[in-house]
Length: 181
Length: 79
Image 1 (cartoon, chains in turn orange, cyan):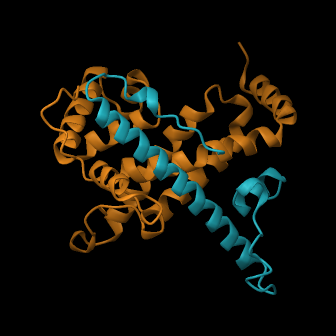
Image 2 (tube, helix red, strand yellow; image 1 turned 45 degrees about the vertical axis):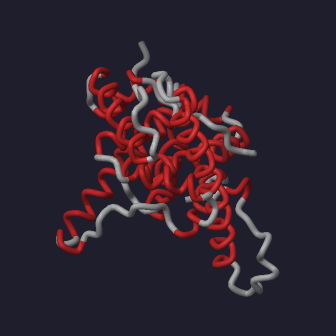
């Protein structure tokens, strides 16, 4: 087993072998969906979500050679960073001044989406927090075990939240009466 | 397209195919919109970094690979 010094030396050697183009390509591929994931799962506005994504990537750069699953690591870090930011805002701003969670993405994004797509995103953002979080992790491509670990839930609780989220979405989108499990 | 959809396999519980399709399509479209917005944001950052240039001159300026200046600076080894 490697000690801290051994691990550090190993990381240093790996860092020298990192191809900047590899990280750049990963950034291009993952950043948009990471920002969307943060905005959807936490209710942060798109500007704050982009800042959170940026911070997560900066942290990832320092650890890049040691990350076994950079994508999962990135989402977990961004998730915790976004929660901390949301909590800080709640502490600093009087409760009656905190606006309700925006029911749509910023205007800059809204113009890019068709009406029915905006409707789906708005309904996703309007779900109860746990349902919204589970749907965001699900849509970002994580499996139940990963979601359960990230959110501190059992896999059954993840499945249940997704069931209710899908049922609510189906109802709000006029697709109710079908099996949304 | 630089971004590829990650979310389809997440909708794995069966059930309403139309709901799955609408969720996937909307998620995908929103991610593409975010990508464009990030590119625009990077261009604006470049614009702010070059105050002597006109907006026309800086219209095509962008950090490497569409990354923000902060991450680009990190990649170059700066602070």
